[in-house]
Image (cartoon, rainbow, N blue to C red; front, side, top):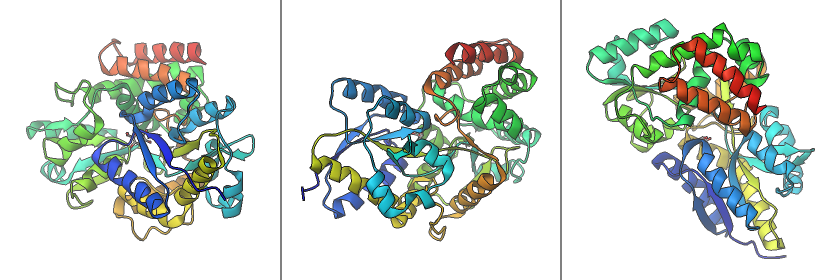
Length: 397
Ligand code: BGC
């Protein structure tokens, strides 16, 4: 049998919390004799990583494994660029334990092409416990509560909302805002891409909310990385951050504890619903038995229940299989696991638009443009922004 080669891995896990989680994977592979060649490309949401990937594939030299989200995986599979993990998936019974919502992206034409690492979700808020106590101590349950708490934080002399002005971060906030307009509305607008939902009254309202949130951000938000925004909440400069649960990885890395130093809540008005994204390692067509063997070993390591727990405890996400005990997870992690299972049963689990699980990249990018424009004052009101969104999506479809 050929000796396993090193794996070359392209990813965007470059923040402190992300690097700590990645290290769990590196060490796991190392213990099995698989070496790691690192190809980090910074930038949340993975846009820069996807650009770097295209260059490598065009040059005929793809990495072994690539961190990838939703529709991008399907896109590469359709182009015939991905390998086949059926042997390991069948031997280990992945079909039975990986939720169908993830398999929809991990399989193409009935074949396994990617190994899901986790499930993240975007409709979360991370609040400083101290800032919340000083603002009345009650976690906001709906939009009006949220505005009250943000106003109090402002009056208390801190930046109410920590935010990094990058299109994917604004789109991440917008996932929660749109979902707070209702489950059916989120589905109609972002999954079905219904022109009336995209351009109508409820979307106008969602944009008005987004523009309202803009008023709670500090002056230096443009271009700031998401983890620096998390740091503002961690060090007490800001009250809260609306961000996916990878933000929890930053709090944990800084030694902060849920319930003591910070509070995790669903975006007000979205309790019971989950907008998810799953990081998967898409396996590229590589030549040579040794490389293919390393790919299969990496995939097998990732899907092991023990690894799923160890990795996701650090990353802030929840396991990509349904049979992993929540024992080692903190309260936010336990809530994440429970919310995901319930949303899946109740039909309130939706792919995240911001993170490539609602629509293909062309549509997602069109949404990014309008959402960022709206956040930065391009439109006179929500109605104008909603009309722009409907046109942009129609052109991109
Ligand atoms: C990924 C997360 C990552 C975040 C910020 C998301 O798209 O799914 O794993 O931590 O971007 O980099």
